[in-house]
Image 1 (spheres, one colour):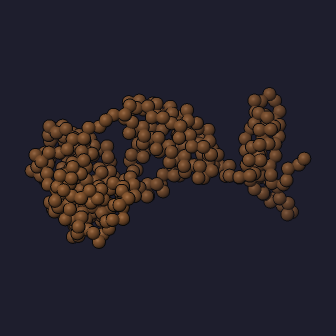
Image 2 (cartoon, rainbow, N blue to C red):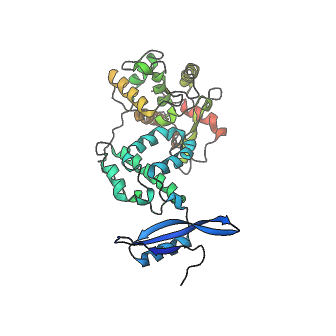
Image 3 (cartoon, rainbow, N blue to C red):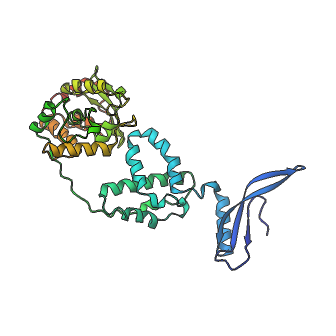
Length: 356
């Protein structure tokens, strides 16, 4: 029984082949003159039995897809997916590209041929990295697969079966003491001990005060643009990336006004803390600076300790829990819609209660 025109066909190739049955489908028509048209074919695949070939051809005709996408590699899929993602979440570019570097072994493999074993080998090869780092790489794989499935490049998300191999480590949080915070106020405008020469002049010492008095995540600070800072009305319009609640208005503490003013006057970029390329400073560069300064000053803190310190200081000052959650961008059903720009004066009053 012949297949309908345009349905495709199956042929058995000569010789001793493991998969001798070739399936071809019609991908277009071509004029050959005198009004005659012939079909243009593309190979769908090769199969061991005729039954497998017939099933593949029937499945394709039930839901046709772009065959040119079948050989799209993981790297090519990333290159097509990432511009839209970076436009929406610009502050994630560096950490996402860093995660992509760990996937080099699968860059040139077609998405349709990748399996969970390939992805697992990437994660297992990161045995010296933290669980958080491995999680970022697995998250990247998942986002690329979601894009690929939506474009019918592949049908399965094999990243769902990847397991993290690093041990969970409890990261102790150490609150900045009043004396430690005072050190950064005393050293304003001065080079800090352990500060790398190439980063001097950026006023990164002031950035620690910004973190301590706003509770921002470091990634949020590094993505901050001058246009997002409104000193006249005492608020920062923050375009967070982690959750919907992370996109929020942060009131500016009274002591922070001259700090931000000087930082904005000092920088020659759209970003409050610019890197060499004119974009926001990369997180690894900031982390390296932060760790070096902390060691040289005899302090034992991570960048995230500033956020923990801010939350603790607000709690000690008696700031209402709902206001704290809104300011730091923690999701909560009774908070998401509670505070808007019209409540800015109330948020400023709350944050001004903070002292170290």
